[in-house]
Length: 356
Image (cartoon, rainbow, N blue to C red; front, side):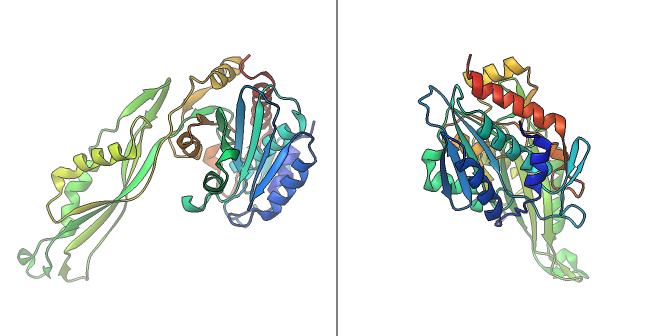
């Protein structure tokens, strides 16, 4: 079998900053078209390789091929003992290495498999390659369960939380700062809104044994006219992470109720963007047996990932990949051998044994 750490290094050595994934897609396409029994389809810089063996179940393994821009000291990968350093090593060239090696070596799986390599995950959601596939070729994403190779250090992170950002605008009345009683300071009014956010008690919701911890945070603030004017407008951007037992509409209504005591008729709340969460789906027999056979650590995914895109298509999904998410996108990004091999062996077990 190929040394997965060396393969990870070789993939890191192929630059693939978002919107520049052609070279790595070319490489993967060459490798996968040489594998007997795989139907390979390219849509732009997205690549899907599928078996068609008539199995009862289909498993989707998905991973993004792009990375954030490199730092000055990690443009070239470094193999150091049982560790590879370099941009994308953890997020997620090591996961791509696992998928590629599974496709090349597990030729007669007990389940049908779709290997989905997609572009532009690290930038705006509207450019996401998985979204492009869902729009242009949704048939390529069909399956019974999906596992995304996001870095989880070989734990299974089920589902994901939803997220939204809301713009809160408070109104006041301008006046000269020498005569502030003639106006009303909109920035001062932010104090009550911020106090409500600081005192907010987030929900902790357990679903399928996974605890999702919600959050409400003020993330940016702006306002002011000049150094001698009482400001008549202040703006606050709020981020809310909500458990997947709620829709984004429910979450929005909840936050509006939380902030209502500090708002007046001329104030406004506007949702800037939103993304639905995804339920864990751990009751699916493929995932349940995988967890039991391999004694996997299972926890909730507190951030938002593309598992939500699969959930929207009716496919239960989870995050499962090598690498430590806390070092992703950092100047010293790295991945160790052990979690790469652990993830490979667990996924190989899934493909060879299915629900047995």
